[in-house]
Length: 310
Image (cartoon, rainbow, N blue to C red; front, side, top):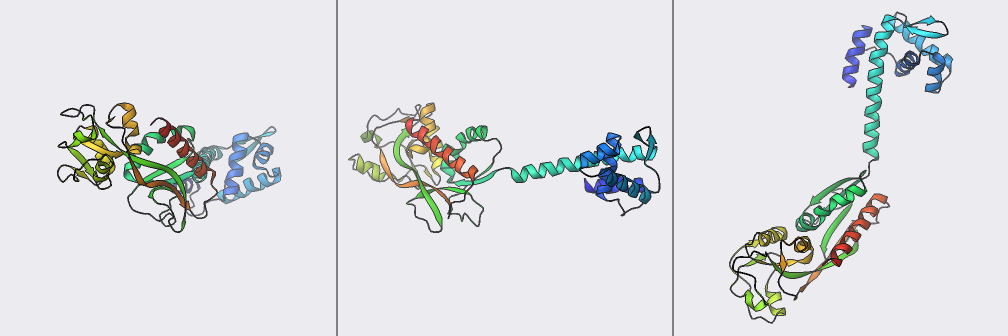
């Protein structure tokens, strides 16, 4: 936009690279638009003498008059009319651009990271509600299995899974999880009625979802499955179960919405506690940012609602 301004004003003034000062152009534009030096001075918060001085300085630089007296007001000369139109349009454009930059800089921004499985199956489906309530917030959501550096990576909040107590950060307990056995209501071969009927069935496996501890809890003498599908991501494991590709041992947080929607069924009441918890992690000391606290409070409220519906 500034490049275009240079070209247009250079062509008008026929003095490339020697544009008038911004105060002179503003004084001229205000006087041209209001038709009065006094009203222009009031708008610009300067004296009428200052406006007259800027206009005279501009006319001297250009070498022609921009105004003629008309009664108690001012009338534009043909040259002044041309210039007024261009300067008004460009000043409005510059003002709009400055306002946009200011809004972008003042817009609350958050960067949040979470494990891919939790981000996809629990967090993302709920984010629309947060934005509806906080439309001014720009929320960046990242997913990663890596233990990222909050300070280096510019992260405001991380939802981590573990035992807490990470060095150099502040950790607040978010929620505990547990495993349950789930399957599609349309599972080929029908649904098992007891854990013992898992024997010989297609059991989906994940890197973080071993079956052996569940078998032991159920009093079953069954080995860890060694055939079938194995997933590195828990979200993929859940999706495979939804598609009827087998029976999954999945974390409650990842299947809660699917259970409520009927895409999955919980097969048995028996559940296996998960030894690790989810934590809300922020830099140390926790930054005093209202938008961050608003998001944390919203997360807690959403999790409470999720647990109550379990």
